[in-house]
Amino acid sequence: MNEFIFLFASCYNISMNIIEVSHLTKKFGKKYALNDVSFAIKSGSVTGFLGPNGAGKSTTINILLGFLNATSGAVTINGRAVKPGKIKTRVGLGFLSNNFALDKTLTVGQELKYLGHLNGKFDKTYAMELAKRLNLDWDAKIGKLSTGNYQKVALVSALQHRPAILILDEPTNGLDPLIQNEFGKLIAEFRANGATIFISSHILSEVQELCDEFVFIREGKIAAQITKFELSKRSGEKISIDLSQFNDIARKNFIAMLEKYHLHYQISAGDLNRAFMQFYEGDNHA
Amino acid sequence: MLRTTFGKTLFEKRWVILGWTLALFATNLLLLQIFPPMKDAFSSMMADLPDSLAVWFGSNGEIWSSLKGFIGLEVMGQMALIVIVFAITFTSSTFAKEESDGRLLSQLARPRRRASYFIQKFLAIIFASAIVMAGFLFGTFVGSVVLGDAISIETLFLPCVAVWLLALVFASLMFSLSAMFGRKALAGVVVGFYALIGYFVSSLRGGADILETLAKMTPFYYYNNPSVMDYGFQTDNLIVIACLIIIPLIISLPIFCRRDLRTR
Image 1: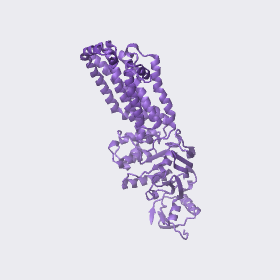
Image 2: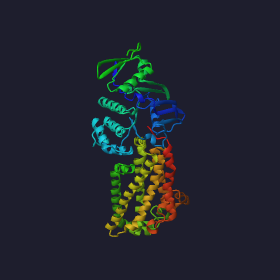
Image 3: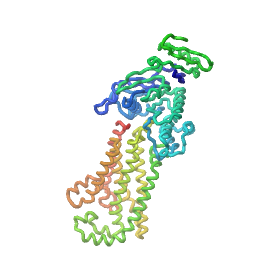
Image 4: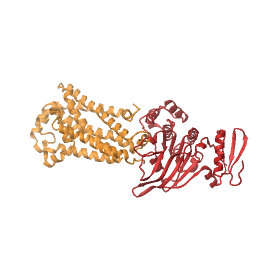
């Protein structure tokens, strides 16, 4: 059984789309990198953007961030159209890529200070707290860091301004397993605080536990957009959910959503603080 | 200093700027020390040279008879090429390289306008090259004092400004090509080729009419012609140099703000 922690405190706020991609097409020369791609990301959700290498994940993210122009179609973040010259869509947004590049002549603290100021303000206390959690030396020269530590600086720079939207392009590449675990915890914390998180990966198992929705892309086209529940139903997998973080309202809304999607579940309450839920392909047990 | 792109660029490059400043200070100081022993040798050599070869060194033999003339020709002429090398390489490493290695994306993923980045980067290049030129100026001044033939800072200031503006022409071209195409190598090859060819065409322009015509297409023709040390700035030359700096920036800014960035 694949058990996972699933914080669902914002399930009652699920109807609002934070990111909308509509009929997005991007051509490089005559080649289509994206062909009529459409999907939406709900507020407070953690969405996995999955596909093989070269499927169009990074191209989509680069358009979301205004690095690339769309050939046709539209992208909005918080209802605002994304365009290279406009900066409002990048306010309150954190971005991390495995290709992230930093100034090697600066120290960790200097780089984070600079990038923090580019975000509007630099919260040194919080940045240092994140660095400490990731076991990152504040005064180390970036040029002398290992690949894993370099990636940690990039991670802190993406999180240090407490973004409401996180866009992570293959974020766990280069991270050692211990830091991947800490990364997962940080993502869960941001999600619990209401952040919307969009993670691209070419490995489903890498992001499966973090995400509650999945967008699959292949050869520049969207293959599917499904919830975690639908994914588990399709795979016939039984999953359990930790409801200990839920208050009564969140729990009611969560149950209502399960009903809405006709999902089969069972709640077992051995421990009052931990209620487990299981999904079955057969009868519905409450 | 780390609050803005301008400040961060200067902070990040502080050792490069300091190194070039000290190097130009020392080079100019030392270069001037070869003047006394070379003076007589040059004068006699120039007298024996045919006119077609004399243009390589400057056809006016009197230039070599005074320190002021030597500075006007050798220091402000030959050393200008070194300052241009600084301007091109500094622009390449502070602007063009940031896009090719991905650092541009990590900055523009934040709420920062491309135009602001563009302007602050070029201001940093202007400022850094001005600091380096201060080393150039004071090296020349101290060199003349050491020779016991002090030439005032005021006299040296304008020709140094002329060299600085010439370097900014190539910095602007390098910067603009990088901004438009995001290709560091392409920009480097084009600007390097233009600088080298322009320098030789301008140096040899007295030898043939075609070279005289071609020389007018290079900034070398305008920055110190006639000698700024002797005649001050010529307004029309100054306008040409200013246009060569500003026009590429005006053309490239809107393109940089709209084009696809290199995302590797």
